[in-house]
Amino acid sequence: MHRFAALFRNLLEPVDMSIKHWKRALFILSLGLVLGIVPAHGQHHGDITHDSVPAPAEAIAHAGHEADHGHQDQGFNAGEMITEHILDAHEWHIADIGKLHLTVPLPVILWDRDEGQLVSFCSGKFHHGHESYRGYMLAHEGPNKGKIVKVLPGTMEQDMDAALPLDFSFTKNVLGIFVSIIILLVVFISAARRYARHPGAPKGLQSVLEPLILFIRDDIVIPSIGEKRYMRYMPFLLTLFFFIFLNNLLGLVPIFPGGANVTGNIAVTMVLALFTFVITSFSGNKAYWMHIVNAPGVPWWLKIPVPLMPIVELIGVFTKPFVLMVRLFANITAGHIIMLGFISLIFIFGEMHAALGYGVSVISIAFSIFMYLLELLVAFIQAYVFTLLSALYFGMATEEHAHEH
Image (cartoon, rainbow, N blue to C red; front, side, top):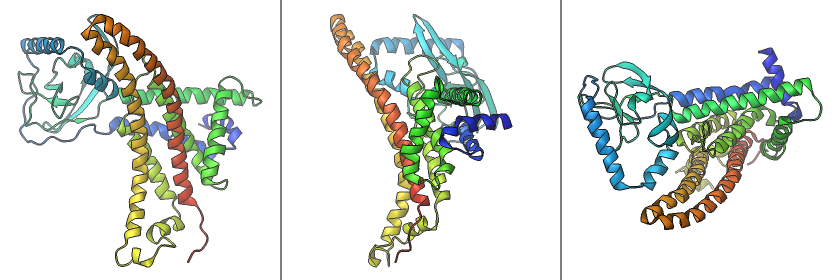
């Protein structure tokens, strides 16, 4: 541990970070663990309990045949394709080669509230959602679409009277979080080791990381928080920036291990915003809370008898992290939807006429390339904005105010 501390200390020497602060940057590990165990689904009403019985092979084959037949009749479904790409999943789809589906199955961990037991198995047992296993299946329609539900014995139909199992599964986004954590640790530890061996001018990976760290310190943290108090927040803000930036970039990579829509998942952005909210609340000094309860310069009739201004200020305390959460989620998700929409136009027009599909493909690919380049810029901007606003909230919470009457 002492050697690990020295490595991070050497890495962050350009920003004069003391050894006691870098440990806080490791909170990202617990962040990934928290996201991995948050129950993904709510409870479905009902108290009737059924035994978990696998569906017969004949029923499974018949259901799969009907699903394939219906899919062929419907043709290309752009909405379904886009939804499958931006939502979380219990398996990591890589590619389809003819009838071969290349996927990475992930662990399924359920707490069956009816049976009162923990159930775990591999998501590959679902066979891409065409089969049930041990009385569970992936719902394809209805309000529970995409969730794991209990099925009636001997059928592929959802048991509407059974409670939804609590889902603690290791999903695609959770795996994507751990992939980004590993990349961040490898990159920063390797850069730290190079600083320890060659403390001179930065080279290679150091020359990329050091300007970003200095940019965050000099253009974001110090102007927002001040030179006296900025050091205690540097580890969190550095981790926040690089975590969001890296996951934004990985979300644009179409091949494994990229492609997970981590920052386009509102649960992830909610946890990031929650960290900012908690740190802001605990960092707030007396002046910060007094300005919320009794804002100076506001007419008394806005405070007494109905405390309108304190209510407005208190609402603002909660709307700030809410805006952080929605802004990152909405911008990243919107970018993915637009790019997938352009690609979908090729298949939509291609079903009308082959020549029309080829013609539209030129325009769609051109716009998709433009959107990819724009998304590279958005990936940096969204990480910058989230970090900047978090720093501003910390600055407002710790700012010293002169005595006001």
